[in-house]
Length: 274
Ligand code: SF4
Ligand code: SF4
Figure 1 (cartoon, rainbow, N blue to C red):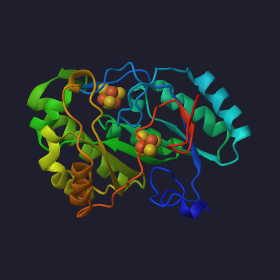
Figure 2: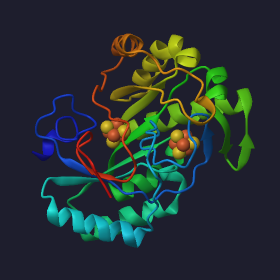
Figure 3: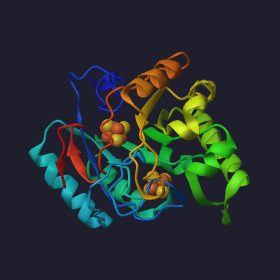
């Protein structure tokens, strides 16, 4: 079965919903290095795709590893440990220490991380040491002007940036991170949030660039209106389908995202909250 990972067994990589392994999202990453306009930081958003109505919990690494070991006793099908929030996994040392401890206790477990991509390239050596095999990166713009509307601010190389320059640098970091991950054998799925007034007309260009830098899969999900984007209507089902069709001209699409929380265990859609 191992050779079928992640394409068939990972619940966020496989479009077939048979033979899926369970995954656990350990909510150990509290801080974030940017501020997305749709994120209010009080909710347990996973993979940065945003899921409303969830209360935020944060575990320290000891609590997270203890909980992981309890769950794995009860669930023989639990084979993937992931950190997807509630902040940015790669901006929190707690992410690395949690995975390090799990690796020592259970070297057979697969690791998956989600990221906004700002630190992906520079953290790749550490991901390789931990044997992280898959990452989900959020990339919802290819035009810096669009990125400047999605991200309110970001800390890049120690500087607080906003506006066009920030948007340009975030996109560069995201594409560089995917390219480097791909070069060293870490598989990348990209999450794209469809925000019709901002990125409806750049979905094809995002998908084309994802394929160019070596991403394997794209997951286009609808905006959940919230925080400073609560006034923006989400895309209609027809708009979402059309965006996925456009993306599929360049890169394989993942169609089963549940925009789940960062504190869950199970198979997306049938999760148990930790
Ligand atoms: Fe929220 Fe994720 Fe955006 Fe950070 S990158 S502001 S955690 S949605
Ligand atoms: Fe992340 Fe979507 Fe998979 Fe949930 S279903 S873990 S939000 S990619």
